[in-house]
Length: 89
Image (cartoon, rainbow, N blue to C red):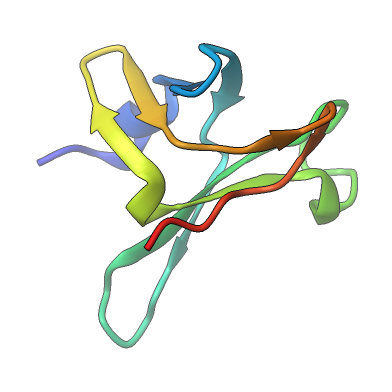
């Protein structure tokens, strides 16, 4: 079992290019099932929740490859410096 506070201090790293995406700022939870649907990483330039949510990077839970002691490895598709997530079936 892991606490959210422990989850938030881990680096989130994209396995496709080795790039550090940041740290988890929020979780999207399905209230019906109680399951985590996605992790949310603040976008570039976002400070203290003051800027638009559109710049956030949302990684669906199914795109998490591995949760280690220090990092969370994710599958994320970057498009020419812009960011969007890639849905995996």
